[in-house]
Amino acid sequence: MAFVITDECIACGSCQAECPSSAISEGDDKYVINADLCTECGTCAEVCPVGAPVKA
Image 1: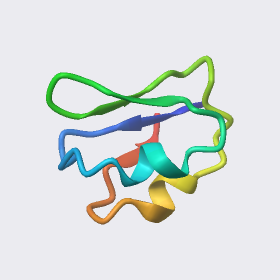
Image 2: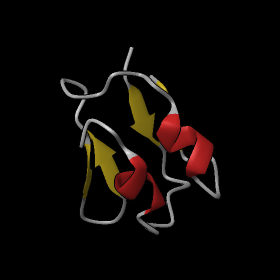
Image 3: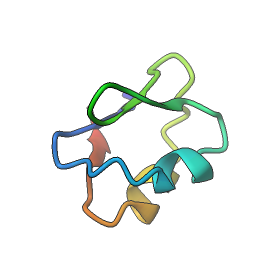
């Protein structure tokens, strides 16, 4: 299962910068993860200061 970004997201962009598969993009009010590109590596969750990315 791919990761998803919860409403805890503060739109800092740290996850997008670290995603090795370029699966994260800026949404309207938070970042979003493209499930088709997500490799479930967990890097986004490791770098997020608020713990917004979680396994779906």
